[in-house]
Length: 486
Ligand code: NAI
Image (tube, rainbow, N blue to C red):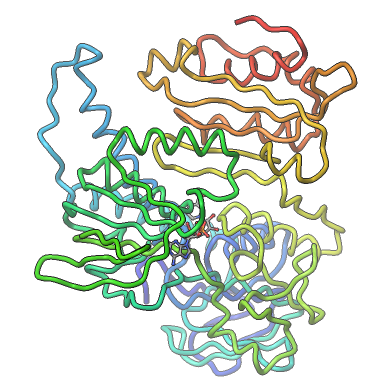
């Protein structure tokens, strides 16, 4: 059994790990990542009797090979950058380098603590945990568990939530060996910083690892197939990231097709474009993630799965079969842990007959933890125009913000996109896009403005504390009312 996994017997289900028939539940959840464990916690807190099946580690990708470890490593990069610039603050401490083993130990400590906390929470709410692979029976109410510490078990429920998540995509010619060619799963375990690294794919994952490896000392090249990195992001925001990457020596090559690689003595040569190549001691393949319905046995059921492998659902996360829901990376919605949480709650509320409010996927919060950080909610300027909105836009750079100067991070901006009123000022806030220091933490009030469908005047009315980075948010809103301070 995994250290973080413990089968919890309940009064009704004395020893769920040993029998062939092990009880009936209100809800069975297959998959213990954010989508699955949020469904379990929320459902149990509403009084439902829940079974949660996990074949690997409770916490899923996010906790073990995703958000948490990636951000923990990125924090080491931040500390290193701060130390490198300490002299500018009058602190005469030189960084004497990096001990990656301590970094990795710290990262693992955070994961272990969170995993332990999660298990305790689930135990505290009397969720019954099964360690093994869950396979949905053709009757859509029975789930067979096998291959794990719980042994062969068959359980039934009134409702089933599928939350089996996703796995990294790979590309032909790049067989992942975990050493030279890695995905996000393996790069998080690095024990040495490579001299040269190539990152294939300039999406959220690619940019976070490019930023990390560069800060740790690698010479990094990003190879992106599309015309720009972070596709889909507002172009003003992307430009700030691109400029920062360039200043730090990260080479970004866009519009290039990667054709293969030729391993050599101390690394490999990655071939791309029109006969160009670049050497690397580490190649990070970050070309997206694919859904992972592979072990759910859905081919024996009537649950609809798209050509791309996503389980098909409606706005309440209901699959094509009554009584079966699907949430998280398994469905074709933004592959973000917090979307998994939100979908888990929608599914549980639907099971409870509470008529949940569907998620407005166009306005969910997005956070990318590269340096500089990126965060946004709602339309980009381009997307708002494409959707037919007449827009008015305001941008404020952090260069003029006192707190940004104080923390020594003046690169970045706040950009607000609002509906244009007849007098040319801003009406409803359509999108807020942030890049710069603590952008991911600044997103809170931006997210609320967009999702509460506030007008710029309503938001500008509120006082921002001084000196803070959030003053730039307030100023940007205020300038759209036609008046301003700074
Ligand atoms: P992605 O789909 O966001 O980006 C993949 C990039 O790879 C795209 O720009 C694509 O054009 C490019 N690409 C695909 N094939 C290529 C090829 N053969 N050569 C060069 N470029 C190629 O996927 P990513 O970054 O792997 O992330 C996966 C999911 O996880 C996404 O949905 C992402 O939003 C989410 N995620 C979000 C994070 C965050 O918000 N902080 C962090 C990590 C992941």
